[in-house]
Amino acid sequence: MLEIKNITKTPQLIDADKIILGIGVIAILFPFAMVLPSLFYWHSCYDQDLLPSISAYYHTSSRNLFVGMICALGFCFLSYKGYSRFDSNAANIAAVCAIGVAFVPTSIAVGESPCLPVDGSTAREIIHVSFAAILFLTLSVFSIKIFTHREPDSTPISARKLFLYRFYGFTILGALTIIAIHIIFLSKQFPHLKTYKPIFWLETVCLVSFGCSWLLKSELFDRKPI
Image (cartoon, rainbow, N blue to C red; front, side, top):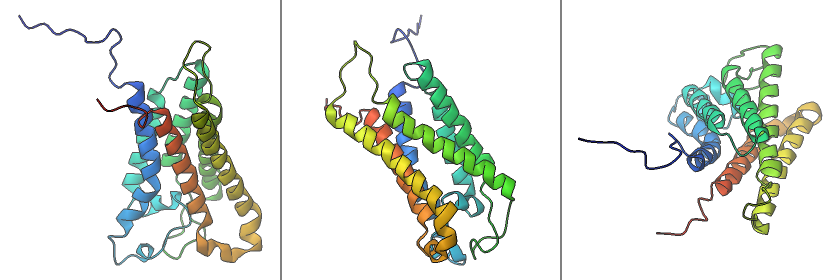
């Protein structure tokens, strides 16, 4: 008679390393995945230039991909429990904010982009930006606080990893600070800066830094070949 036995003492559908790896890969690919589909729509005006922000791609042919990837990121966060209640709470906050970013899309103001129709309201934009800001702040906490913490009996974290975790975390904080300065001050004083798409590139820096931090945490590059 066929008998199926568990091969582990604590069977799991998805192990923690795969969740961490998935989060890192999705984060790094996300900004590039938004841009590529629009390049195939040769008769649209946004195939020739970047949009003002990554969130603006919700209003293009990349909408389904935008929502799908962010929701996948959110569900990965929900699955991540970490090593303490603090880790789990941070992951849950990131999950809620990620899903909020997906389902409360950014607004397109008058004159913001010649490629996109005016859509949304100030209230919706405030909610969207709040979700995005809290999400990125939480991601920086993972790199600076959570990934650098170790229990007394656990293996010490190498100095190189500690440096990289903090570097990625403070890079996210730095990019967020510049985005805030640009929105509050620079965009009004120097309107020509929008031609360089600073928010798009700074958001990309945040996502890539966050993704690299999680790939480092996944120990993907530490494993020796069998």
